[in-house]
Image (tube, rainbow, N blue to C red):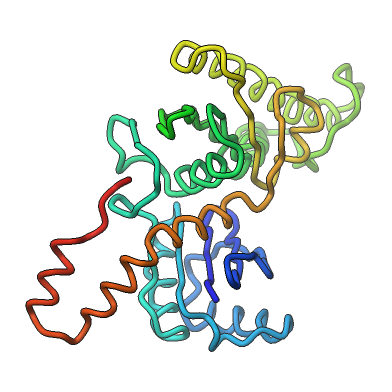
Amino acid sequence: MLLAFDVGNTNIVLGVFKEGKLIQDWRLETDNQKSADEYGMVINQLFQYEGLDPKEVKDVIISTVVPSVLYTLQHLSRKYFGCKAIVIEPGVKTGLLIKYDNPKQVGADRIVNAVAAYAKYGGPLIVIDLGTATTFCAITDKAEYLGGTIAPGLKITSEALVEKTAKLPKVELEEPGHVICKNTIQSMQSGLVYGHMGLVDYVVKKMKKELSELCGEKPVKVIATGGMASMIESGVDCIDIVDRMLTLEGLQMIYEKNRKERERRKGFEGNGEAAKRECEKNSFIEK
Protein backbone atom coordinates (compact mmCIF):
# COMPACT_ATOMS: atom_id res chain seq x y z
CA MET A 1 0.00 0.00 0.00
CA LEU A 2 0.98 3.63 -0.53
CA LEU A 3 0.36 6.29 2.15
CA ALA A 4 0.04 9.80 0.70
CA PHE A 5 0.16 13.07 2.67
CA ASP A 6 -1.15 16.38 1.35
CA VAL A 7 -0.07 18.94 3.95
CA GLY A 8 -1.81 22.32 3.78
CA ASN A 9 -1.66 25.29 6.09
CA THR A 10 -4.96 24.35 7.75
CA ASN A 11 -5.37 20.59 7.22
CA ILE A 12 -3.43 17.46 6.41
CA VAL A 13 -5.30 15.17 4.03
CA LEU A 14 -3.93 11.65 3.94
CA GLY A 15 -4.98 8.71 1.86
CA VAL A 16 -4.15 5.04 1.45
CA PHE A 17 -3.83 3.53 -2.02
CA LYS A 18 -3.92 -0.18 -2.76
CA GLU A 19 -3.08 -1.36 -6.27
CA GLY A 20 -3.46 2.22 -7.50
CA LYS A 21 -6.92 2.78 -5.98
CA LEU A 22 -7.74 5.12 -3.11
CA ILE A 23 -9.30 2.92 -0.43
CA GLN A 24 -9.44 5.37 2.50
CA ASP A 25 -8.81 9.03 3.26
CA TRP A 26 -8.83 11.24 6.34
CA ARG A 27 -8.44 14.92 7.23
CA LEU A 28 -6.40 16.10 10.23
CA GLU A 29 -5.64 19.55 11.56
CA THR A 30 -2.15 20.74 10.61
CA ASP A 31 -0.17 21.16 13.83
CA ASN A 32 3.54 21.91 13.56
CA GLN A 33 3.88 21.32 17.30
CA LYS A 34 2.99 17.64 17.00
CA SER A 35 5.86 15.16 17.06
CA ALA A 36 6.32 12.22 14.70
CA ASP A 37 5.19 9.92 17.51
CA GLU A 38 2.00 11.91 18.09
CA TYR A 39 1.12 11.81 14.39
CA GLY A 40 2.10 8.14 14.35
CA MET A 41 -0.32 7.30 17.16
CA VAL A 42 -3.16 9.13 15.43
CA ILE A 43 -2.50 7.42 12.10
CA ASN A 44 -2.25 4.02 13.80
CA GLN A 45 -5.66 4.58 15.41
CA LEU A 46 -7.16 5.61 12.06
CA PHE A 47 -5.80 2.46 10.44
CA GLN A 48 -7.15 0.25 13.23
CA TYR A 49 -10.59 1.85 13.04
CA GLU A 50 -10.80 1.09 9.30
CA GLY A 51 -9.35 -2.41 9.67
CA LEU A 52 -6.12 -1.57 7.83
CA ASP A 53 -2.69 -2.98 8.68
CA PRO A 54 0.08 -0.33 8.84
CA LYS A 55 2.60 -3.07 8.04
CA GLU A 56 1.16 -3.25 4.52
CA VAL A 57 2.34 0.30 3.78
CA LYS A 58 5.41 -0.09 1.57
CA ASP A 59 5.94 3.55 0.54
CA VAL A 60 5.08 7.09 1.61
CA ILE A 61 4.78 10.23 -0.53
CA ILE A 62 4.46 13.78 0.84
CA SER A 63 3.34 17.07 -0.66
CA THR A 64 3.62 19.99 1.74
CA VAL A 65 3.44 23.78 1.79
CA VAL A 66 4.41 23.77 5.50
CA PRO A 67 8.19 23.16 5.77
CA SER A 68 8.07 22.79 9.56
CA VAL A 69 5.88 19.67 9.25
CA LEU A 70 8.00 18.02 6.56
CA TYR A 71 10.79 16.80 8.85
CA THR A 72 8.21 15.40 11.27
CA LEU A 73 6.50 13.35 8.54
CA GLN A 74 9.82 12.19 7.11
CA HIS A 75 10.80 10.94 10.57
CA LEU A 76 7.38 9.30 10.93
CA SER A 77 7.84 7.54 7.59
CA ARG A 78 11.18 6.07 8.61
CA LYS A 79 10.14 5.07 12.15
CA TYR A 80 6.62 3.74 11.57
CA PHE A 81 6.71 2.54 7.97
CA GLY A 82 10.38 1.70 7.49
CA CYS A 83 10.88 3.75 4.33
CA LYS A 84 12.26 7.08 3.17
CA ALA A 85 9.36 9.17 1.93
CA ILE A 86 9.22 10.64 -1.56
CA VAL A 87 8.85 14.41 -1.22
CA ILE A 88 7.35 16.52 -4.00
CA GLU A 89 10.19 18.90 -4.81
CA PRO A 90 12.27 20.00 -7.82
CA GLY A 91 13.78 16.95 -9.47
CA VAL A 92 10.87 14.56 -8.97
CA LYS A 93 9.35 13.35 -12.23
CA THR A 94 5.94 14.90 -12.88
CA GLY A 95 5.36 14.65 -16.64
CA LEU A 96 4.86 18.43 -16.77
CA LEU A 97 7.13 21.04 -18.29
CA ILE A 98 7.31 23.75 -15.62
CA LYS A 99 7.52 27.16 -17.31
CA TYR A 100 7.50 29.25 -14.13
CA ASP A 101 10.34 31.79 -13.96
CA ASN A 102 11.74 29.90 -10.98
CA PRO A 103 10.27 26.35 -10.79
CA LYS A 104 11.46 26.01 -7.19
CA GLN A 105 8.92 28.64 -6.16
CA VAL A 106 5.88 26.69 -7.35
CA GLY A 107 3.96 25.17 -4.43
CA ALA A 108 4.07 21.39 -4.35
CA ASP A 109 0.28 21.21 -4.07
CA ARG A 110 -0.15 23.24 -7.26
CA ILE A 111 2.09 20.86 -9.22
CA VAL A 112 0.37 17.78 -7.81
CA ASN A 113 -3.08 19.16 -8.69
CA ALA A 114 -1.90 19.99 -12.20
CA VAL A 115 -0.52 16.48 -12.74
CA ALA A 116 -3.79 14.84 -11.70
CA ALA A 117 -6.04 17.26 -13.58
CA TYR A 118 -4.06 16.94 -16.82
CA ALA A 119 -4.00 13.14 -16.59
CA LYS A 120 -7.74 12.90 -15.89
CA TYR A 121 -9.17 15.69 -18.04
CA GLY A 122 -6.52 16.70 -20.59
CA GLY A 123 -5.61 20.25 -21.52
CA PRO A 124 -5.79 23.13 -21.83
CA LEU A 125 -7.21 23.52 -18.37
CA ILE A 126 -7.40 25.71 -15.29
CA VAL A 127 -7.10 24.18 -11.83
CA ILE A 128 -8.53 26.11 -8.89
CA ASP A 129 -7.62 25.05 -5.35
CA LEU A 130 -9.98 26.70 -2.87
CA GLY A 131 -8.22 26.15 0.43
CA THR A 132 -6.37 28.37 2.90
CA ALA A 133 -5.21 30.26 -0.17
CA THR A 134 -7.11 30.26 -3.45
CA THR A 135 -4.79 29.33 -6.31
CA PHE A 136 -5.41 29.26 -10.06
CA CYS A 137 -3.07 27.25 -12.31
CA ALA A 138 -2.99 27.18 -16.12
CA ILE A 139 -1.83 24.12 -18.06
CA THR A 140 -1.65 23.91 -21.85
CA ASP A 141 -2.70 21.01 -24.06
CA LYS A 142 1.02 20.13 -24.33
CA ALA A 143 1.38 19.51 -20.56
CA GLU A 144 3.08 22.85 -19.99
CA TYR A 145 2.54 24.33 -16.54
CA LEU A 146 2.43 28.06 -17.23
CA GLY A 147 1.77 29.52 -13.79
CA GLY A 148 -1.26 31.29 -12.42
CA THR A 149 -2.68 33.44 -9.65
CA ILE A 150 -2.60 33.28 -5.85
CA ALA A 151 -5.24 35.03 -3.72
CA PRO A 152 -6.23 34.95 -0.04
CA GLY A 153 -8.62 32.11 0.64
CA LEU A 154 -12.13 32.61 1.93
CA LYS A 155 -11.23 31.72 5.52
CA ILE A 156 -8.17 34.01 5.54
CA THR A 157 -10.26 36.88 4.20
CA SER A 158 -12.91 36.30 6.86
CA GLU A 159 -10.34 36.20 9.66
CA ALA A 160 -8.62 39.36 8.42
CA LEU A 161 -11.94 41.21 8.24
CA VAL A 162 -12.70 40.38 11.88
CA GLU A 163 -9.15 41.01 13.10
CA LYS A 164 -8.77 44.41 11.45
CA THR A 165 -12.16 45.83 12.42
CA ALA A 166 -13.31 46.79 15.90
CA LYS A 167 -16.97 45.85 15.81
CA LEU A 168 -17.44 43.16 13.16
CA PRO A 169 -18.08 39.68 14.57
CA LYS A 170 -16.86 36.30 13.40
CA VAL A 171 -19.40 34.70 11.04
CA GLU A 172 -20.13 31.31 9.55
CA LEU A 173 -19.09 31.05 5.91
CA GLU A 174 -22.40 30.39 4.16
CA GLU A 175 -24.53 32.05 1.52
CA PRO A 176 -27.09 34.51 2.92
CA GLY A 177 -29.23 34.17 -0.23
CA HIS A 178 -29.11 37.85 -1.24
CA VAL A 179 -26.68 40.76 -1.45
CA ILE A 180 -28.95 43.53 -0.12
CA CYS A 181 -28.67 42.45 3.48
CA LYS A 182 -30.38 44.03 6.49
CA ASN A 183 -28.06 42.90 9.28
CA THR A 184 -24.32 42.81 9.89
CA ILE A 185 -23.93 39.01 9.89
CA GLN A 186 -25.56 38.52 6.49
CA SER A 187 -23.85 41.60 5.07
CA MET A 188 -20.47 40.08 5.94
CA GLN A 189 -21.46 36.67 4.59
CA SER A 190 -22.59 38.28 1.36
CA GLY A 191 -19.37 40.21 0.91
CA LEU A 192 -17.17 37.24 1.75
CA VAL A 193 -18.91 34.45 -0.17
CA TYR A 194 -20.26 36.33 -3.17
CA GLY A 195 -17.13 38.46 -3.33
CA HIS A 196 -15.04 35.28 -3.60
CA MET A 197 -17.33 33.92 -6.29
CA GLY A 198 -16.78 37.14 -8.20
CA LEU A 199 -13.02 36.75 -7.78
CA VAL A 200 -13.17 33.22 -9.20
CA ASP A 201 -15.35 34.25 -12.14
CA TYR A 202 -13.13 37.18 -13.09
CA VAL A 203 -9.77 35.39 -12.81
CA VAL A 204 -11.04 32.39 -14.81
CA LYS A 205 -12.37 34.71 -17.52
CA LYS A 206 -9.01 36.49 -17.82
CA MET A 207 -7.06 33.23 -17.67
CA LYS A 208 -9.16 31.63 -20.41
CA LYS A 209 -8.47 34.61 -22.65
CA GLU A 210 -4.71 34.33 -22.10
CA LEU A 211 -4.79 30.56 -22.66
CA SER A 212 -6.70 31.01 -25.92
CA GLU A 213 -3.84 33.15 -27.21
CA LEU A 214 -1.48 30.22 -26.63
CA CYS A 215 -3.69 27.21 -27.36
CA GLY A 216 -6.05 28.56 -29.99
CA GLU A 217 -9.78 27.95 -29.72
CA LYS A 218 -9.53 24.64 -27.89
CA PRO A 219 -12.05 24.54 -25.02
CA VAL A 220 -10.53 25.17 -21.59
CA LYS A 221 -11.73 22.89 -18.80
CA VAL A 222 -11.96 24.34 -15.28
CA ILE A 223 -11.40 21.93 -12.40
CA ALA A 224 -11.88 22.94 -8.76
CA THR A 225 -10.70 21.22 -5.58
CA GLY A 226 -10.18 22.16 -1.94
CA GLY A 227 -12.41 22.61 1.09
CA MET A 228 -14.37 25.59 -0.26
CA ALA A 229 -14.82 24.23 -3.80
CA SER A 230 -18.41 23.00 -3.50
CA MET A 231 -19.65 26.24 -1.94
CA ILE A 232 -18.03 28.46 -4.58
CA GLU A 233 -19.03 26.16 -7.46
CA SER A 234 -22.69 26.49 -6.48
CA GLY A 235 -22.66 30.21 -7.32
CA VAL A 236 -20.54 30.39 -10.47
CA ASP A 237 -20.88 29.07 -14.01
CA CYS A 238 -17.18 28.85 -14.84
CA ILE A 239 -16.32 25.65 -12.92
CA ASP A 240 -16.86 22.45 -14.91
CA ILE A 241 -15.93 19.82 -12.33
CA VAL A 242 -15.33 19.70 -8.56
CA ASP A 243 -12.80 16.95 -7.83
CA ARG A 244 -12.36 16.57 -4.08
CA MET A 245 -9.61 13.92 -4.22
CA LEU A 246 -7.55 15.60 -6.96
CA THR A 247 -4.43 16.18 -4.84
CA LEU A 248 -4.28 12.68 -3.37
CA GLU A 249 -4.76 11.15 -6.82
CA GLY A 250 -1.98 13.38 -8.15
CA LEU A 251 0.36 12.10 -5.45
CA GLN A 252 -0.38 8.52 -6.47
CA MET A 253 0.28 9.36 -10.13
CA ILE A 254 3.60 11.01 -9.32
CA TYR A 255 4.55 8.02 -7.20
CA GLU A 256 3.95 5.72 -10.16
CA LYS A 257 6.09 7.93 -12.40
CA ASN A 258 8.98 7.62 -9.92
CA ARG A 259 8.42 4.08 -8.62
CA LYS A 260 10.72 2.20 -10.97
CA GLU A 261 13.58 4.61 -10.40
CA ARG A 262 12.95 4.44 -6.66
CA GLU A 263 13.05 0.64 -6.70
CA ARG A 264 16.25 0.70 -8.75
CA ARG A 265 17.86 3.07 -6.28
CA LYS A 266 16.78 0.86 -3.38
CA GLY A 267 18.50 -2.03 -5.13
CA PHE A 268 21.79 -0.16 -4.94
CA GLU A 269 21.55 0.37 -1.17
CA GLY A 270 24.31 -1.43 0.69
CA ASN A 271 26.22 -2.27 -2.48
CA GLY A 272 29.21 0.01 -1.92
CA GLU A 273 30.41 3.40 -3.08
CA ALA A 274 30.20 2.57 -6.79
CA ALA A 275 26.50 1.90 -6.45
CA LYS A 276 25.99 5.12 -4.54
CA ARG A 277 27.76 7.09 -7.27
CA GLU A 278 25.55 5.41 -9.88
CA CYS A 279 22.44 6.43 -7.95
CA GLU A 280 23.60 10.03 -7.74
CA LYS A 281 24.40 10.11 -11.45
CA ASN A 282 20.92 8.89 -12.32
CA SER A 283 18.96 11.07 -9.90
CA PHE A 284 15.44 12.25 -10.75
CA ILE A 285 15.13 14.47 -13.80
CA GLU A 286 12.18 16.83 -14.31
CA LYS A 287 9.79 15.53 -16.95
